[in-house]
Image 1: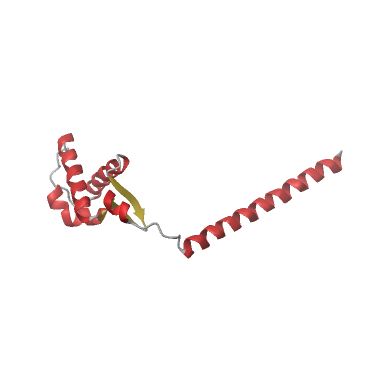
Image 2 (image 1 turned 180 degrees about the horizontal axis):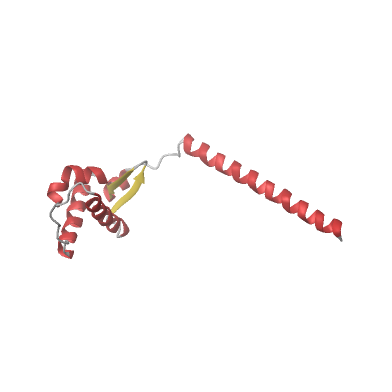
Length: 129
């Protein structure tokens, strides 16, 4: 197998610009879609190292505010800023609220157990005096 040469900064910048234009064009793309469908146009293959390169470029675009790049389930999804602005901010789903309520309930139970333990420790110290 032939060893590939390292990409220059100019080539990486071109990949980043092409990725941004594709995300802007389609509105929303996953990392797998970018590499799978448009890998030939970008000059990347469906390999872990090339996917990592594209992911790093998406991270850079996200940190500069050009796109929104988040994890949705198991997929890494890149959205154009116009797509993010159009999304309505509706009420949170009931499943999310239920999960949050369970977390708060577990936290309360743990906190209550810790308070009981602390009270017992203080009572034991008082009894020894």
